[in-house]
Structure formats: C-alpha cells, structure tokens
Length: 97
Image 1 (spheres, rainbow, N blue to C red):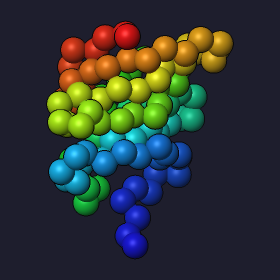
Image 2 (image 1 turned 90 degrees about the vertical axis):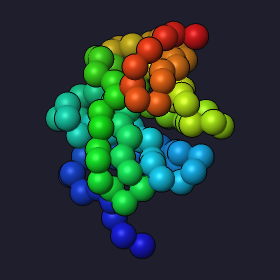
Image 3 (image 1 turned 180 degrees about the vertical axis):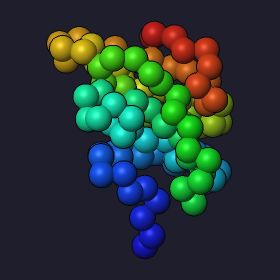
Image 4 (image 1 turned 30 degrees about the vertical axis):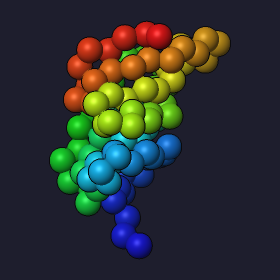
C-alpha cells in the first residue's frame, strides 16, 4: 500500500472512476478544517483538482456508472440542511437535484 495524500487534514470518502484511473474524494485540506470540498485526482495521486468551493460540507462523491458525472451531498454551513447535487466529472454544470 502507498499513501496517495499526506496533507495533515482529512481526505475521506473516496470513490473510484469506473475505469479505475481517477479517484473522487472529500477533503478539508484547503479550508483549514472548516469546510469540506470535492476533489478528483489520478489513481496514482497526481493531477489533483478541486471541484467544489462553497461554505459547508460537500462530501460523499460518487461517479456515475459511465463516469460522465459525480453526485454528492452538500450540507449547509450550519449542518441543518442536506441536499443532493450532481455535476459533470470535470466540475462544471453543477445542479441541485
């Protein structure tokens, strides 16, 4: 086993791209621990990309079966409301379900 991340923050809830070449996950790495965002990276840990950037918790990302989109749950900053969102796998076209 080889660690793919080492930030001192939490990198959690991974999901593999259908072909196995990418991983989507949630992390609080760029917020100092205050919020979680959705990220994607290559399966070897390279090419890290942040896909969401809003206050609150964006977590539990899952790729669609064809790999074209990612769904996840977004909690409000106070944690009292959760909604399901979908976006294209590149982070574009974000929409609430």
